Length: 252
Length: 203
Image (cartoon, rainbow over all chains, first blue to last red; front, top):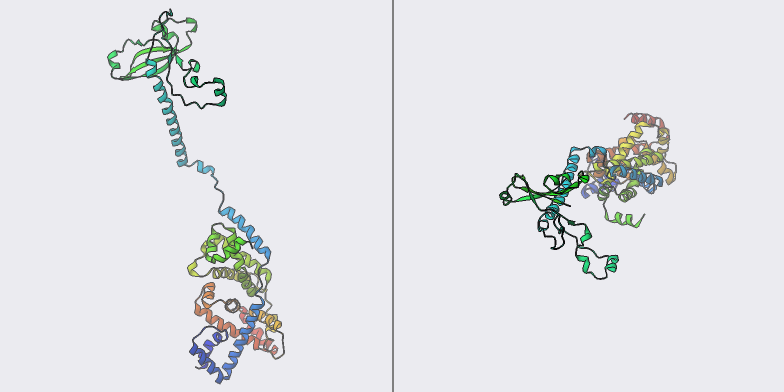
């Protein structure tokens, strides 16, 4: 080994770095015979010793405690900005997608409401209303109105409350709808409308509940108290598949 | 330190702590700070010699980690190297802004006495060495601080400095040679030292 190659490895030897064992041995042999390189190695070792002492002397040095406190406070603020609670801006509500979604939801709600409100009405106006009975014989009633008809509207299973069970004593009357429950209607016979034909009704049709002025009854030859001519009266209109009214009856 | 943090510290690597911290975990950030703040602070202190500045740099480094932790790439080096790299940038920036931190004459006169014939205490020698290191040009000083004072490997130092390992080796060799020259010089050679220092200031 010559002095130049010794110079290449002298720092690593002095710093006790991992180097090739042969190179290390050769460098040490060279320093034994070369006075300047021996001094150079000694200086390097002195520097290493001094630097190690400096490092050890400052080993315990660290940032003051308040730096950590400041950083943690800063982290809280940063985290609040970086991970905020979800806030919906006004611009979000102005988005066309959101408006479309709201409109679609409203349509669905109204559609469901319409279906639910229409289906029970059709059921109500079907079988029970057509099952017309006669006034009991001997009552002497002379009126175009037919006897009361109990509409079979769907009734939810009543949850017996403590109060009602105490009042009724026995549960016999709880299941049967009473006459005072508000579902009783009195209706006239169906009156054919002049332009309709009975043959058309055989193909099917539907009944539509309408409200007419009380005076409309007079046009069908029914007695009307003209003092109440402006009041409304309900009527069921039988509509054929052709969309025309074939018969009408008045209900109260 | 809370038990939760201690547990986290025992099981999570620095990289995992960074990822957890980026998810908003304050405890992960605190744990990472407690692990690495000494390295960052000491690096800044060795580089500047000013505790207040080292404190500022340490705070800035972890603020950057907080804001730009996504920039950390595990493949490019350790978290410690990443933090020291940030610290190095801040230190160099501050040193350029405030050139008057190190009294070169003072450092030179103290350093000159280390290997002089007169007896000196170990503390004096360490203090003189500190000043001699501070007196080095920045690109030499940083390799001495990283490799000799903070005992990083050449590869780790290269990752911090963003240069090749060979560059680190050559700079360290040159830096140590400068230190030896400086410490070997007698007080009578102060005049020649001053010329050398003036030249280094423009390096």
